[in-house]
Length: 99
Image 1 (spheres, rainbow, N blue to C red):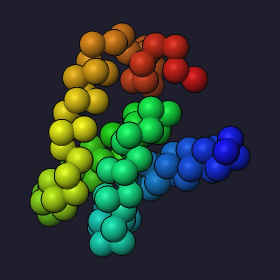
Image 2 (cartoon, one colour):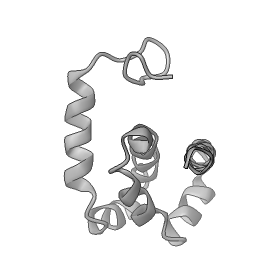
Image 3 (cartoon, helix red, strand yellow):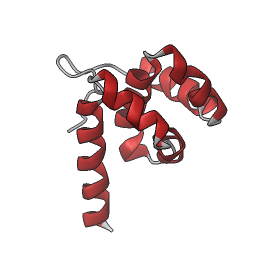
C-alpha cells in the first residue's frame, strides 16, 4: 500500500531527526525501536534511513548490546558494503539517483 509506505517513510525521517537528542535516543532504545528497525532493513525503500537511525542510536555505548542482540548486524554489514560499492550523492549521503 503506497499510503502506508509513505507514512512509514515520514515516521522514520522524523525518528532520525529525533535521534540527535540524547534523551530521545535513550527513550527510543527503551521502547523497543531497534527490533522494529531491524525488521525494516529488509525493505529496500527503507533500508538507508533505518541504517542512519541505527548509527545514531549506536553512538551511545549502552545501545550497542541492544543492537547486537537484535540480530541485525549481518544485514547492517551487508547493507554498508552494498552502499559503499555505489556512488554517494554530493549532499545527503544517499546513493546517487535516490530521491
